[in-house]
Each structure stands twice: as structure tokens, then as C-alpha cells.
Length: 370
Image 1 (tube, rainbow, N blue to C red):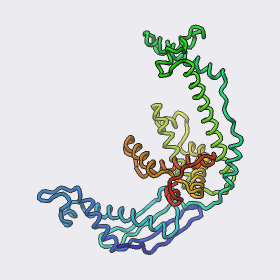
Image 2: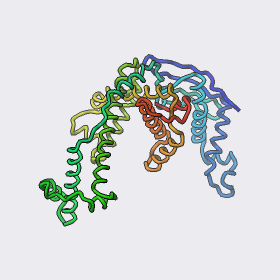
Image 3: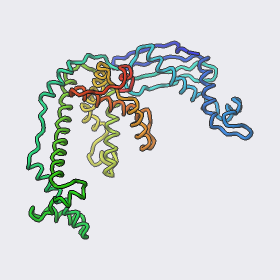
């Protein structure tokens, strides 16, 4: 049976957010309550009953009415909320703030949802902008000097390793290797490169030149991507809702704290040493957060217009990999992160004149959280 949400009212605010107030009728909540009991009771083990066959009245006494109704509310929102957005033609950014305002057995459930609306805007001639930046890109050339410098660096690293293997301290070995005259450095000869899996020194040098060229090409491409997107952002009339910028600042703070942890420092320690507050840090980042949010919105809109989206199988593979290697992570947040990253890469490939290899429809492209 299909249930409809009732008493829907929408309050659109000037800051780009909207608050929905609505109710799910009592008969629908009775059905979700029954589903909640079945779900929660699947793992309940009681003497004299087979798993999954415990009577509902016994399960209710074991689980508790509060837990049952909370699960019923979650089931109801998971099913009804997307339908509500579709019927009201609303597109929200990020995670909504959902508040259950009335929840009791035998009654309707009332709730409010507040979130930032997807702003309406018109894209500039992004293909022409992209072409202009593509034409400015320089094909990287690799000089003989760059190859020689890299080979010299590798020789010094080889000298350092040899001294460490001979018993020198790492710091002393590094200093000694750095001071060695060029003529005393160990050669990058056939015998050495064969230990690295190459046929001879000439083959190794050719591959080294290719790798340097690829590195330079990647840097040039990244530089062009930044310039290209900044140009598109600058030519787009787009008002970013303040809550979206604040959410991006929180993301930047979390990433910054994560990076600090690799150096054995907490965010609090950094702020104390730098004599700053979180608010001051956010003020420094605000323009960057606005640009990042604008880029996400523009990428999303281009993906919709060009009908490109990530391969669903690739999305699920990457989500599964991250979830399996990260503790206490929200799979839904990981999925949004993966979809956003893959979509961004597809859009940039398209702007670079490459085949984006779209695998999904435009509807799928626009269905993920920004």
C-alpha cells in the first residue's frame, strides 16, 4: 500500500534555505511500526522461540516502545522523504536537518526538514571557455639537463643506501652522499638498473625521460584545470547559500585536522601555537570555501547538461574499499564523496576534450548530494 505525506508546508527563506513541515498519517506509521518490530526482532534470541519467530507482543516487551518507534520513524523517512522531494520538485544540497516533532504509537508522525535549496543559475559558455584554456596549454618538453639532474639525484640516493648498508647512520650517510663529487658517485649502469627490472641503462634513461614528461604534463593539466574552473566560476552568476559555505568550511577543517594528525599534532595544538581561533581560521578559508562550493555546483550542473555520471559499479567498488579500510565511517557520506570525485573527473575530461565515458543517465547524474 502506498501512503502519502499530509499537511505539507514549505517556507522558503531569503538565505537560500527552506523548511518543510509535514506529517505521515497514523495508518502509515502503524505499518512502519510493524516493519520496525520485524527488523529489530530478527536478531532477538529468547528461550523457547526460534530466531525470527518470536511473537510481536513478546518482542515489544523486549525491545521497548521507544526503540520501536525510533526505528519506525527512520524507516518512514527513508521511504517517504525522497518521494516528498520529488512531488514538491525540491532539490536540496548536502545533508538536511531533520527533526521529528511528534512520534507516538497509534498517532501520525510530524516532522520538519531544513536544508539549503539548490540555487538556480545559468552556466556560461563553458565549452568555449574550456577550449580557450586548452589552446593555452604548452606541451611539456624534457631537457637533457633535467634528465641528468634526476640521474645525479638517484646516484646520491644509491650512495646513501650503500653507506647505510655499510653501517653508517642514516643522517651521516645522507650528508656524506650529498657532499660527494660527481665523479665519485656510483654509476647508474646496466648492472644497477637491472636490479630495478630494466634491461639496460639506455632503456632506463628513456623511461625516466618519459616519466619526467608525464609529471610535467600532469602539473600543466592541473594548472589548466584550476584556471579553467576559476574562469567558469568568475563568469557564472551564482549565489551560494551561507549554510553551504559553512558546511564546506567544516569539511576543510576536518581535512586540515586529518593532515595535522599525520605530523603528530591536533587542531587545538595548532591553534594554540598559531594564536588563532577556529573562527579566524574559517575567515581565512572563506573565499576558498566559496570557490569549492561553487565548483561543486557548476560541475553538478555541467554533468546534468552533458548527461555524464560515474559507472555505478565503479562507485560501489570504491565505496566498499574505503568503508573496509576506514573505521567508524558513514557509508552514505563516503558514497557522496566518491560520486562527487568521479563526477568531477568526468566533467574535467569532457572540458579537456576527452571522452568522459558516461555510464548513466542525466537523472542519475543529478541525484547525488553536492
